Image 1 (cartoon, one colour):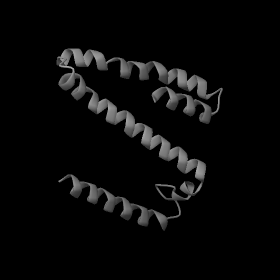
Image 2 (cartoon, rainbow, N blue to C red):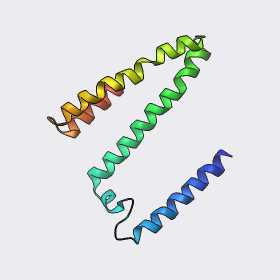
Image 3 (cartoon, rainbow, N blue to C red):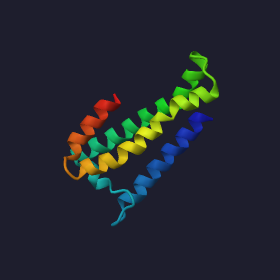
Amino acid sequence: MGFGLTGAGLAAGILLIRHERSRTSPLIPLDLLARPMFSLSVATSIISFAAQMMAFVALPFFLQGALGLTAVETGLLMTPWPLATMIAAPLAGYLSDRYSAGVLGAIGLSLFA
């Protein structure tokens, strides 16, 4: 089932890219991906988001299965993650007006790692 859905998603993505290449105003600006810095930034964003979501999905299983915590304890231990995101978002907006995105991204990814 999973391989079939993955294959269908890849096929739909290929069809979308073929369709978008011939348009004058594409939905996905594929010409921007030819720029190395832009494509590196997009890839870094996708990979860091995927890593964060994998950790966020796996964490409850670890806390309950390996550590034997209850659902309430697991929920309380997971609560700081979205709260930290809520607190960091306005700070990141403030800092993005004063410092370059590359510096802030490097600091953020280092903290995340």
